[in-house]
Image (cartoon, rainbow, N blue to C red; front, side):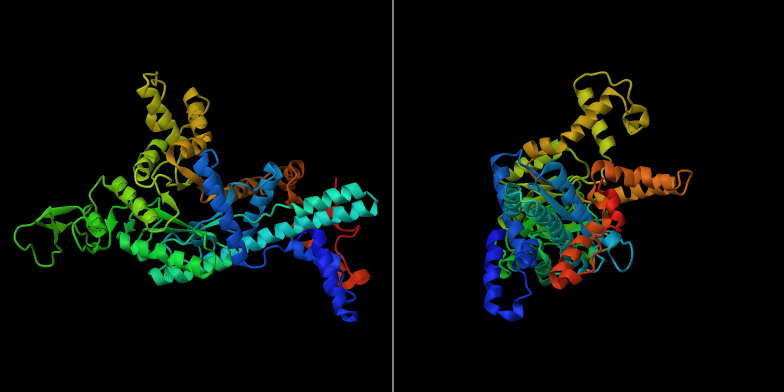
Length: 530
């Protein structure tokens, strides 16, 4: 219903109650209802799943229609990203949020900062999803509240044309609620544990859940060493568990992102169960690094039959088995194909560097089997983007026969090269990386996992240096507040951002003339009106 229809409906409802409800204003109640469009996490999950499905279909038609997100670890940060996106671009289309397990571990655990090893409280994942959407819903309420104030102003001035324009804008308001791709790590346990946590995440509003093929109790960050994968059937059980959770809760078009860490994972905890030669378990075991044995081997040996010969898989003192060196890409391709064939919607291939040709090589092989395979890709701060792309530019120059005598490939990160032609070419490759990778390597969604972890540290360091140094208060004013004013950052009016004006509206609804409101002439936030 439109705002006017909501008010008309509520007016009839209030009138039907008679005198007991005579102090209730239908316009005010309608405004509160419009400001709270999404009343449950499941409503959010259904709404955002539909957005992602439309975006995925659009990408299939045109790879230039890729999507993006930034990771966040607090509701306020997620809210400010969406407010900024609407301010700069006028729409939230194609822009999501990413919920990083790394950032929860490092910043939200009751144990204090932890490495990305699934040691944090798993309930903190759905709690952050709920927090993010609480802040995004408040952003809707704040923006609509300001529009209602403008509507009242237009009506008070007798400007019916402007009032109609504002009312139309209210009815067409674009919500700050966008899809969240939420990291469930390796599922925090077995398939039942994955299902239970997935339900909590969906109930909190998640429409897309990312799960990885590492061993849950040996989980490592995707850009660190020591990663251990599980046989395919173990991973596929978790994919099915997440799908059951979506279906049980009525989010039938929920999205599952299947992540493979096989490219950098050289170990497995288990030898896969095999029924017959060539089945999925046998294909997994074929990647094991084995050596032939004579006779029955040694006491304690674990042996497998490979092409009629007894082989001893190489086993480490940790009781983990080792894959053959150089088999990572083949394992990634098999992981991706089997995941899509078993109900996953999107893929995530964790790589050691941002290299389009490497990613495209694997995607081409996957698309030979599943033509519409699409990726989510981690544009990770774990990569040294400057060094990687300067080295790629160097290698391209060398292959093209261009003069590289003025460059030392091992030192290309040096500030000495910042203003060189090679550095400028590398920066242009970085600038177009997402566009080029989406066109060439099947990447539907680009995300940065930990951006605000780094921006917070950088801005805090700069402020501490200036404020506690010679600049004093000018360090804050010049670096923060003046820039907020000049750039139109909404948070310069931090009382408004925290909900003070929404609270004033409610006080007026509830108490009428007796309302004690905060936004009077003595509110120092009025200093920012100019």
